[in-house]
Image 1 (cartoon, rainbow, N blue to C red):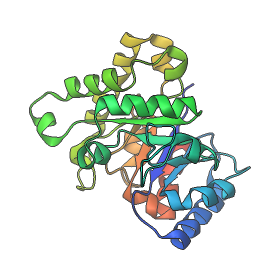
Image 2: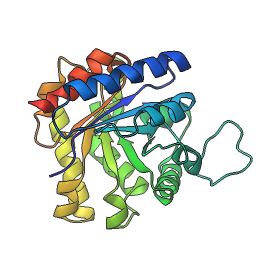
Image 3: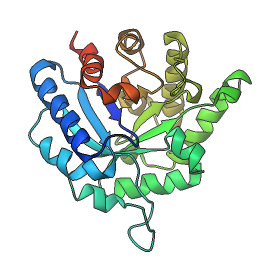
Length: 255
């Protein structure tokens, strides 16, 4: 059975004290309230990573993710951070290909393939994001866009490597806009993603691939979204900055 995951992406929010306080709340609530096997991942800004990784030690269900890495091992890349650096402080996951990185920092599929390789080399599990813009959705090209992102970004991996990847579908038009893909729209794309993975690898790999929904998921719509056959959890933005909201999403899998 594939893993159920709720991952929080704090983006560029919270100073050091605020982040540590929020994470402490989340950890205590997970201990008290989570009764299932769902995994909770918190992807904080770099300044929090060593501390929250330490706080998560020996806490069942909780792991830490980085929001980005550079593709190089080391070097003269001022302001960047490497896979080995984040791994050294206890990070287990890394978000790659987030729509904001693609849009604001011009990250290409080819670059993301390099970052994926760097992550896997250092035993980081990529949360690899794919998804279409409003224009691509309205033009009917979204399936082609998603297939291209998968093909160029991660389908160069072997079966063994790809098995370590978590996919996250982000309808870009539903991020930070208050819009949400309907459960039917989200399921349609998740099913397409799983079918595309099966065509590239095989049915077993596809069945075991965790695919998250990332587009304005909140406590009021999480249950309906997560009840869809091919949606295995969420990549949560704004709601992950409030411990109660975030845990209410995580607890959808308690039922």
